[in-house]
Length: 106
Image (cartoon, rainbow, N blue to C red; front, side):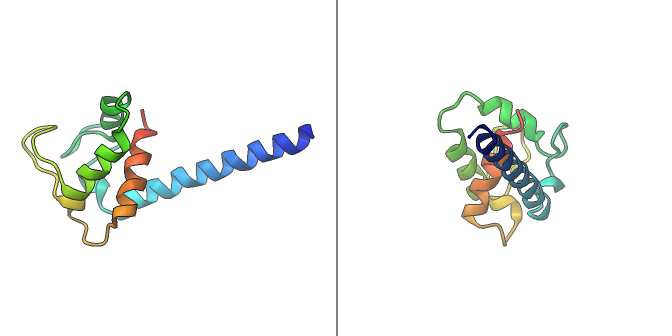
């Protein structure tokens, strides 16, 4: 029984790591990293700074998803973020994945 639990835990860890990697790829392929960096401010804020700012907000995932989908202006400075980061191919479901990924970076 113990070996089964350890195996299930290990499999879950591998799936989570794969999900994070897939989310990082989505951020790259969607153009997010053209304006955002994980650790440092670029054109927009660092993704870790975004995660830290909203870490204690109960609706953070939904809030960030909405900002990704609709765009944002004035929250982090004067440079606006266009809707869906300017990506015509980013779906609303992908925006949710990206929001959840960003929140893991704190």
